[in-house]
Length: 574
Image 1: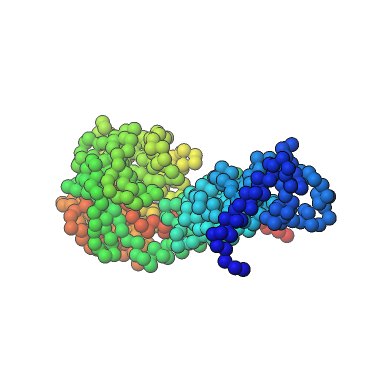
Image 2: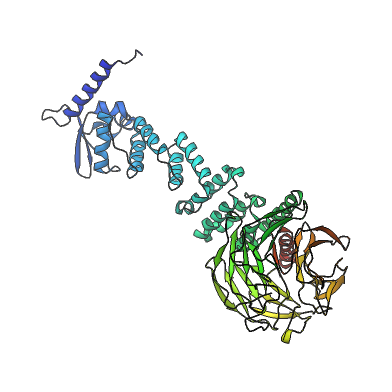
């Protein structure tokens, strides 16, 4: 074909204009009328046949329209038909975000390839997180390969927003599965995908619940953050299905393996005597430290927890022997650790209280109150609404006690009781029933102790009983009994303890004569305590949290859950 020069193009435009003008001329040569909604348009059959395969077939095969002078276009509204006719004669059409799907539908129906291509070009330029799912559906319906490719790219880029969009809930199973399969794991959107899958199923549970296991099995749970894992186990479709539980347990164990290999060894130590505003991260492997921003209010004898990568510091006092407890609470976002943020005060001021995370609440129990009296009162903090609510009191008043969380229960161990007498009583709070129950007492009463959970056992470490205590007891939860294990190298109280890499690390404290800066480590395999290292400064009446490596007990919880589920669902057949 010879190249088209400007003269030829001008001639073609002139000819097209003549034909278009002829449609409205009194002596028009048009040989056909298209009608929609009783509105008629004069056209030339030959022009329609050259541009549209739909009209070419209509007038070249034996269809009744071939012999009619008026053809009714019932599937295209009259205004849209007018726009199509103008395009056929002039190549001009206005495509906007408001009419783009209508124009594409009409281009497909009339089989006008050049208009379909024009629509595709427009759509490629308006793809966004809000419309990429809808555009992807059109791309699939009308075989627009370039559009399909670019919408898939947009979905990958905006995955977290896309799975929360209303359009995601309207997808069928094949589309949801396809989107999950095509995701880029390097970008790690697994948490957003899980949330999206749950929302998708809940939109029509009767028809979609059976698809959940298939979709869940396509996720890589081991790529999710540790703090997100409890959200998965809360979902009934996971915890009531053995396949999902097994997948979840395998992933959490894999995460533990990765954490062990990468030495997840950092502990955050917060506040304390002479270090009231300090927040120091200690790496127990490298024995190096680094600083987080200083607290807004310096504290001793505070309680701390970490959830969703946020550290919460609750209550405390100005010094470790203060008689003026405080109500303040602060939070530091580990993802953006620039400054501490003040939160609503406790309902009651309390020092040397216990705290723990159960689902989306921080539970706080006991402590020394404003009237210099030990408390039995408890309260919980909603991490979403940032509000405190009173819950059922403990059976005993206590402060300076050990506190741990295991499964759905908060355990409070020993401490000071009525009239500041030492107590060996222990009790646990069951969150679903909102009830406290007494459990087996310690062999030795103690306050100022530290407590941790390791390998599904609770450890009560050190403390004070007329003098500093080096003894350690282990609570066998399933047997409801305490047994003694090896003692600390140094007797200590007002210390802090954390589990790192399947070992217990104890930080600082006081031995009755002086504050300590030594860190001891316990290996349960050998039942031996040893001095791990010494810190630059003393650590006394400080609180602490794990920065990483908090999966071990959670994995054990999952394993227990799976085993219990298997046991409860065994069916005997004859």
